[in-house]
Length: 636
Image 1 (tube, one colour):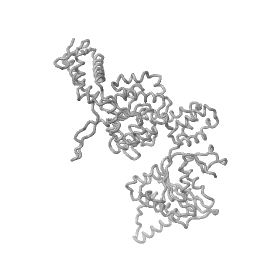
Image 2: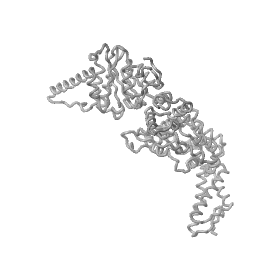
Image 3: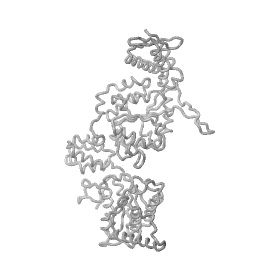
Image 4: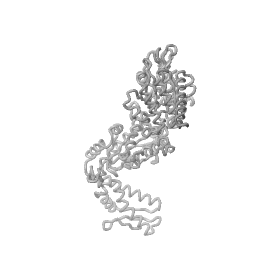
């Protein structure tokens, strides 16, 4: 049969090439999917008629595709059931090995009884996998048991499924676990060759480091193979083969829908496409509605809140500027990204555009300049409520294993049943704004996980569920580049902080310093995924400071009027004094928070005290004036 190139079946070609060369294969990655069976094509040898099958079926077909003189008997086992009886009984070669092995165990027990006068307990007698590994060793290292049938010399390929679960941890093996891998290592190093083929072991794992590194490192007998997620060509093949409405209708409109459907399923496994096909059949949909399937599959509904936003929001820039003052450059850049997100054009330059988050923004700059307030304003603008903002303070996720708090603990670990705080939040509300505050404080393991979210728009939580981030708008904030720690080199302790940027510097100087420091602090692959979406905030100008102070005081006065029906009138001279106090060096360096502190200390606190001490009633008016450079209040 002529070989057919079917895209991501590269791993099959690799295994086929090294079959008979390597005695052991370790397969990791996308191991629970279905795959095109290039070794079981129809008589016409047509790619469009290729069947998709589970990994065991693919491996059985692959090892059964040898030459006419040599072929394999393929046997499957796992830590739960070991070998199945039917597999053992149906295979003459395997049956002989098992019988010899059982005979050897009986002889060993008899010899031990003869020496000790009683049965000596076998430390491995209670471990099914130890015995299974002994059988594998015997099958693959005993040459005189190989037989010929119909002129074909039989070799053996043993596939061990769930090999990741042969041990609790690869770093600290128990006696049984050590025995299993020593048996497999011995079999790997002493496998018997039969003409051009040889007895072979295949271990199927979630990832290579699930098993001891000493087993496969520097072992020339072992080949590690990764099964990647299906690429576009493979998804195209499956959809052509099994989605009959596409197969039977080749009109231009249907072809256009099919191409979009293939793009929308970027990152999905073939099994997930199979489930989409079943959902499509169950829903009795028209082919024109098939794109809604992806939203239904991912989120359980086809509602798209982003489609509603464009008709609802007004002038985005104007709305944001009501809350963010004196940050023209930042507002302009954020506005552009939001418009792109609403239009659904984010990441269109990439092949996986439909799976990436709606938008990614990295807000950096001095403290108190409006970074967090910007994110709150965007959340309210897009979804009508700040509650749609999911905020994570990354100082709480700086410990080594804190990624489990965000993404969920793996099976067997504390908190597994609870899931992850981030993944749970996105599953509950896929249309949301995510804020990762002070991202520089996050552990390295979390930053590595973010690479997948930013690149693929999806993450598998600790429970194995896929969580999609393709409808989220993601913000990071950071104070990196603003100041640095002063370290006492005699004892290594932090004794203070030194400013890198200072009020009075130009915006371009601040931006350059911040971006240079970020390039040192964050990995290049993280910054590459963020791209040109880094937004640097400037120190608050005197004009903006005045606007912020007036806005905060007006908000206080408005709330007092609503709650107590008391009117507060602030004179111009009082405003001038408060503005002067807010523009002092210390509050100025702290930005909006510094202004808020001045308003609280010099206005709100004495106002509250005046209302309490002077029995201010409904309908009264309070006038705010100045005396001896202090704000004073009188009741009218």
